[in-house]
Length: 251
Image (cartoon, rainbow, N blue to C red; front, side):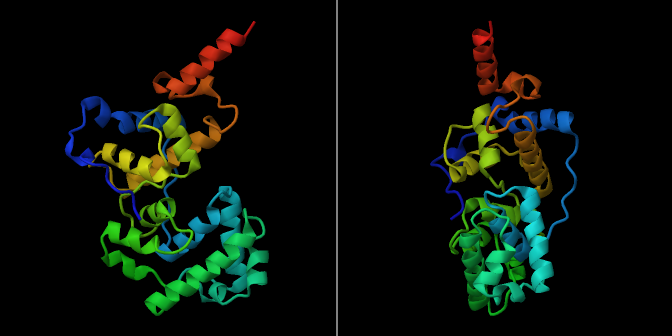
């Protein structure tokens, strides 16, 4: 299910400081990294397949596997039936470079089979006529599809709806910045979306996510974050604490 709004959260007006939290972060990251490369959205089904494969997998590997699937099975957008109909051993071999291919191969095959059974054909184009919440509910009925993936599908694909896909990297940066109280990814998305300006459309939300991702991979890494060079240091309690501790331990 999509994140459930917290009680009364949507009825309390934001303070000026709260209203500028995400825009301020966005401005600082934009000034440091520059404008992210525009995404070329894919259809919802292709994005769903990619997001499932990309879970806990580095982006280059996930992108390569999607290309491998297209080449190996002569598949691709509007023609994922050959992947659905492939044998599990062949599918697992094609997914070898992603994390947990032995789990993702049967999950992907089952997902494509179940979509076909429910829709009558292998497509998700019909989702465009539904409200965003209904799309996410529909997607999350399938095993392995949670709020992170449903948000990616509605935001990154040609559906282009407002959502934030909170993966481990996004969650780490937000928690270190103490933007919202620590919580799981679904709750964090709910809290962050309340802070998103109404003027931010789906594309700007995608750009914001891309900047957070870039920052997570470049400076705000899981191990050994490079706080000294961080453009967010002045607003990051975790970074300030890390540097203070470093200063205390340095002879």
